[in-house]
Length: 203
Image 1 (cartoon, rainbow, N blue to C red):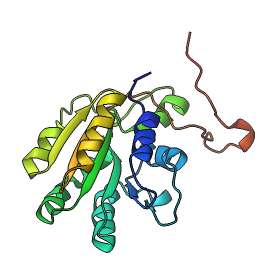
Image 2 (image 1 turned 120 degrees about the horizontal axis):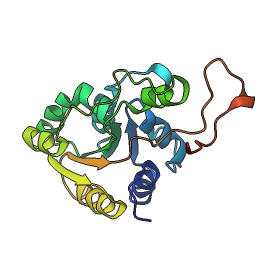
Image 3 (image 1 turned 90 degrees about the vertical axis):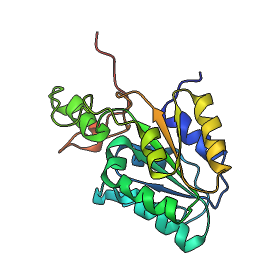
């Protein structure tokens, strides 16, 4: 209870937004978690690149969604995807766009690392970002946006409500575990009979 997980983040977003709030995603685990968990009730309120795999898509999509509708937009992204196009925070700030950016920060390229964990004997290559010490709160402030960090569910809900009270963009850096997985998933070149629905702890 009180732990900050992908599901507690998405539940809090869902509980604190209107049914017509547009939610954009980047590409990766967070994209799948939003698709599975967020309580969408109206069509055209999820903006995602689907299976195209375009990391960095979310920021431009979220800005575009606001420009088209004039409404506040939520972007759910990962630390990997956000780094691909974070320069567009300058656009969000200069245009005073009411954008709430939620970064699921697990310090890894989560979806690829999940595959490496499950199917490639934990031979991690290019997915663990331990050496990168980007402070996304300071990055947001450097662009002229507001920045918050959350490590618990309570901190996130407070930060999210704060973001929705602001006129311009707010970035919330959410610290989550690197071993949070998207489930269910199919192993490569496999059938539905081999679907993975749980990860068993190694003894």
